[in-house]
Image 1 (cartoon, rainbow, N blue to C red):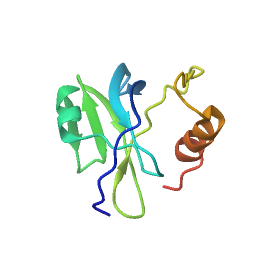
Image 2 (tube, helix red, strand yellow):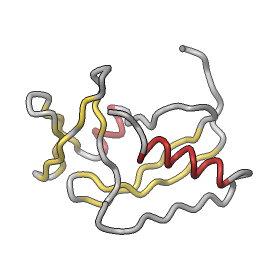
Image 3 (cartoon, one colour):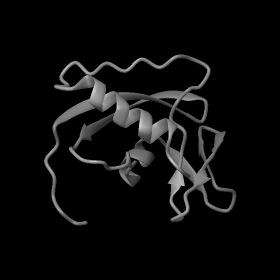
Image 4 (spheres, rainbow, N blue to C red):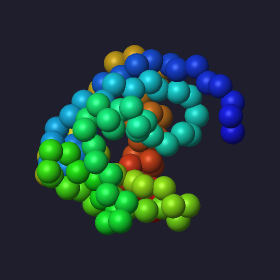
Length: 110
């Protein structure tokens, strides 16, 4: 909506893309906003975008992308072969934050 928001904190998120374990440093902002990767971030990770095949590549390893109803790409950032541990040391309400992440990553409609 073009409205400026102030970040609550900076976190490092472990992600799994194209068979690679990576860490993304990002800022947490209040509200229900999707997690977006900037072009700058993708360039730093050496991501190649293959629009024709709806996939990305890093170091020759490919990962398919899903396309939302609104035409945006969605990438699975989790390594589903392992359990994921998230620690919210500075969260006032860790259960609320965990539920928000659960709704976003596991219950979202593509």
